[in-house]
Length: 538
Ligand code: HEM
Ligand SMILES: *[C@@H]1O[C@H](CO)[C@@H](O)[C@H](O)[C@H]1NC(C)=O
Ligand SMILES: *[C@@H]1O[C@H](CO)[C@@H](O)[C@H](O)[C@H]1NC(C)=O
Ligand SMILES: *[C@@H]1O[C@H](CO)[C@@H](O)[C@H](O)[C@H]1NC(C)=O
Ligand SMILES: *[C@@H]1O[C@H](CO)[C@@H](O)[C@H](O)[C@H]1NC(C)=O
Image 1 (spheres, rainbow, N blue to C red):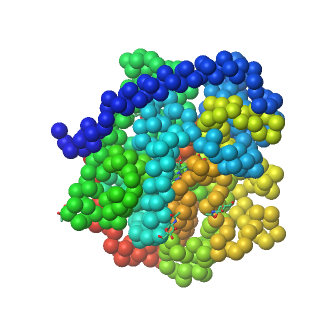
Image 2: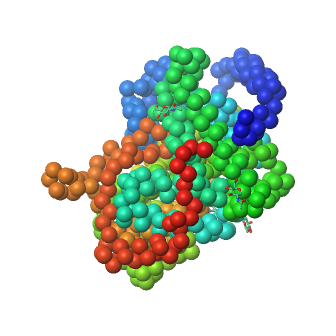
Image 3: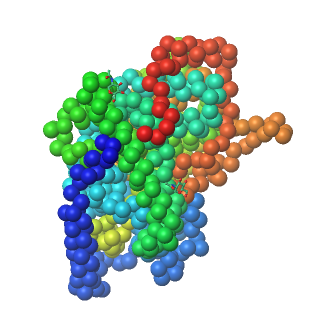
């Protein structure tokens, strides 16, 4: 048996099993008694609701691929705090930043749990998937570790890998070695694997595994995530369950395999700076079991791929529709950097570029519904009763597209951050506009821990694109004309983080000189032969 399974066999299978059984029994007893005692007792008046069928809710109003637009429409009718039952779950939807802060941040103690994922067994308490852990000791330890390794990598300027990878990406756009959206996938995956394991080698396998994970945890990805009672059916009837157990087998192979390779490299002194190296160096200090560390590292790689593909794709399609903003960014790059490519420390000099990035995230939020926080206790807020076990969502789409918080919210307009007369303008321009602290990163104790990483990768990669290319919608082969992108349709998504279907965008070199300079930059980045990816799954 290969060494990658040893970690699994080390797990205390029996006690965990008993633990889960006891937990379920205790849960049922608790649920039952609390019902007897507290029937009819509430902490305030009921929240407004669109109503609907008894268990299913207002199903007719819900379109799976852009439920966030429905959430926003409801907020205009029922207010900035309402609840809706959908397929047996009670959702409390917040559409206002102040309320999100009051509930999710100020009362974080009772609203920092996550709902269990229907298909992904043990999502809350197996210590594997940080973003989906319940409010428990695994969360405390893994989150501390996550913050630590992210901070360490940030301090180390991403080990100098951002610019070389962005250069490689731009060079591949030039040589058209793959379609643009495949290349977006690759640059996000290579960077995330470098940060996690010190090498881009497992990129293809980790990336595939990440996409499958997103599918199997999203309401729109598999039907069992909507009709959650289906999880009780055996897997020969419910094929989602079969799919999920195959997914976990592959994930184990890939995650343990990548980790074991990093460990072997560490032992012979060849492991590069990475989350893995940090762990091997500081093992005692982290207080993590090897199981937790391995999953912490691999999960971080997984999260940072998906979360960055989405905003990068969105920035590209929005900018393709706005040549005037491409021109503004190129002017800034040319004036400030005098023909060199931007790196992580050039951020203070590039407010126009940052404005386009922030505005693309606002205009096309990459986490439009928010990520659910589960309410562990009944709560009163402003005279309303928020009931225990509800899933609380701070709907980013509603906040970002509200005319109350943003003038002309439907319009993509980066100058709202650059024009001193605009309400969204903030100084100093060396710091603002900035992505960090945006509502898209969530609220309270579960806020995103990768905000600096996201801001820097977006900056360096988007700058590399604008350095060398003009981007435009695809050319219709029949008419020879540029097509108009249907952004509404492109932004629709059945998944929690909206990855688009591949589309062709034209990347045209700004000039021959620009193409040549990019080729030179690529040659001198010394990245072309070193550290190739492994073709096959580990
Ligand atoms: C623009 C890119 C990104 C966006 C929009 C984003 C968004 C989010 C959101 C909405 C949450 C949940 C917040 C909540 O529950 O209130 C979250 C959590 C998280 N993010 Fe990000 N993220 C991004 C990039 C990253 C990156 C690059 C990393 C890794 C380096 C990362 C790591 C995490 C982790 C580990 C969590 C889970 C925290 C927890 O559950 O306690 N994110 N992110
Ligand atoms: C991040 O690292 C720096 C330098 O190592 C340290 O001063 C700072 O306190 C750290 N921040 C966190 C949140 O750990
Ligand atoms: C699970 O199903 C999805 C499509 O629904 C498919 O793309 C994926 O390959 C399947 N995974 C496995 C491991 O069979
Ligand atoms: C060190 O170990 C790694 C991982 O097993 C291996 O790929 C590499 O060739 C080894 N290098 C040396 C110098 O032994
Ligand atoms: C985000 O905002 C809070 C206060 O609202 C502040 O304490 C924190 O330093 C900010 N973080 C960043 C990265 O700017």
